[in-house]
Amino acid sequence: MENGKRKKEINGHFLSQIISPDVLSILTALITIIFIVLESYYLKKMKTMMKFNLDTIRVARSDFSDSNKLGEGGFGTVYQVR
Image 1 (cartoon, helix red, strand yellow):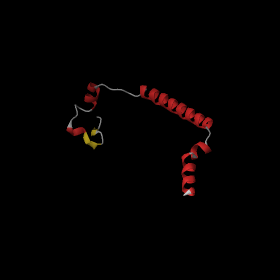
Image 2 (tube, rainbow, N blue to C red):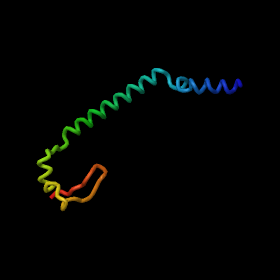
Image 3 (tube, helix red, strand yellow):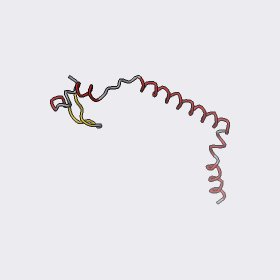
Image 4 (tube, rainbow, N blue to C red):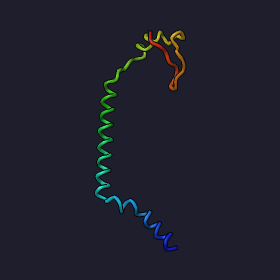
């Protein structure tokens, strides 16, 4: 019994024995900084993406004619541009 109880105590405090609270705080801060940098990068990239209104897309797709239909994709019908 004593061995089983000792094993549970070691497992319960295993992480806190290996990683000090200071190291854990630094890792948390670094992960937070990485997410903030990545988020700002992708938000900036999204602003530079081309945007089209529905009328422009209708002209390019010949008003979504079946003759331009290539097939069905995971997000809907796929058309070729003419």
